[in-house]
Image 1 (cartoon, rainbow, N blue to C red):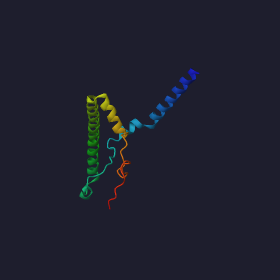
Image 2 (cartoon, one colour):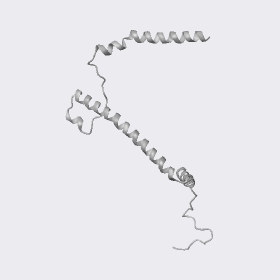
Image 3 (tube, rainbow, N blue to C red):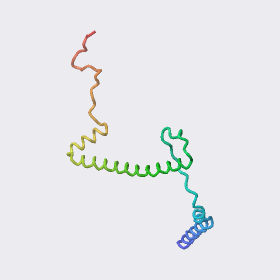
Image 4 (cartoon, rainbow, N blue to C red):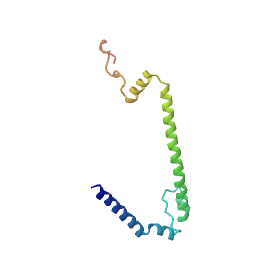
Length: 128
């Protein structure tokens, strides 16, 4: 049983490798160096009215893509720093304060009295 499984996997991998080689994936990219990926993006406000060429638009989209990657990395770092800050701040709290904070954040606080209901021990006022 194990031998047939190994044979089946080997046959499958051979099939994939043969298909990749016959498709010429590696040779097509080397044959046409002018082909560059088309970038997609959105121009800044009012830039569409400038009459930009397709090449200018592509350069702008590439710049946006490059900076979007950098900005995403920085935003992740900011998120990690905020989590670290919160963790260190919570380490200052006592166990009772941590428990109370958990209650407050979950919304499980003491029920508040409804201001519309008058107290039971006093008769309703007769103000008009």
